[in-house]
Length: 355
Image (cartoon, rainbow, N blue to C red; front, side, top):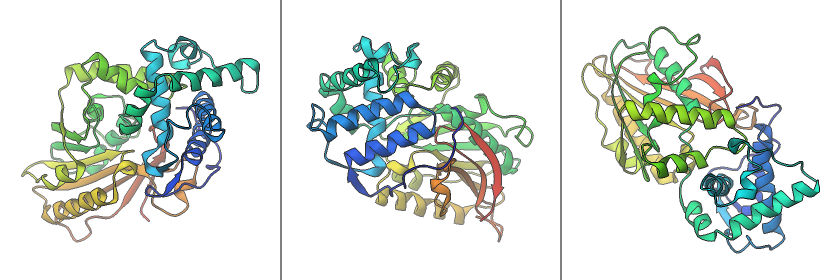
């Protein structure tokens, strides 16, 4: 993704805050502009203006939403999916991921595009309703480079059992065979001996419908991400991984360590979607695994999520790669912030901070 500049122009509400849909769309549009995705922002602005004016989408979208549900991503994905399925040809002509160019805001063509966006969503209200209920399945493999970077820093010398919550199609479970920034990695990656994830709604990346669903969550400006997804789907066809349909709390509670292997629990840009009680269960199960860790069966928790450090969450690079590891030593569990960046994993930079 292109570089960002400055800080986020609006404060980020907490995950559990209930906000108006209009405010949620406005926040997401601001974030898209800062991430240099102006067409995505145009789409969200068109929807927001229509809802605010009591237009055709006002009755299709709820008046208020949980902020962490990121309703803007769900709206964008609905429109992108319609374009990918060739159901909204006028909109498709304006989307960069499909070879199009969006018209300039404020022009007659720009107003026509905004109208087409609203009309397309309003006339496919069944799909919009379904996508509003579906947790976004970004499964962004730009984050694979971050997981690779973290794996190279763990230094246990043992093979890895990789576990992921919110795994979607499990593409990042193949991180070791996806592109990384090898110039930053600390030597060869450890061998990954098995790859298992969980998701409430796993996506099968080997099916056409699975590929369309994953593609729909790519921001419509981000051609690089769109192409990267295609490459990752090709990898998924030859490198097996398992994604089970299971709640994240149940999955981590059932996880046990194994002798002569390093168990790595990983998640990226999914924490925001979890209800508070699920977060508490995951953290409690993680503490249990940490207490059971030894040099023979170590454990690591690796995450790429919104920063929970005061001030950083509003910065131009609000996501952090945080690693904690345990091997039965007194100083285990130290928080290491290895990198910061944007949600999709690009751009990011190493920082190696211990607060």
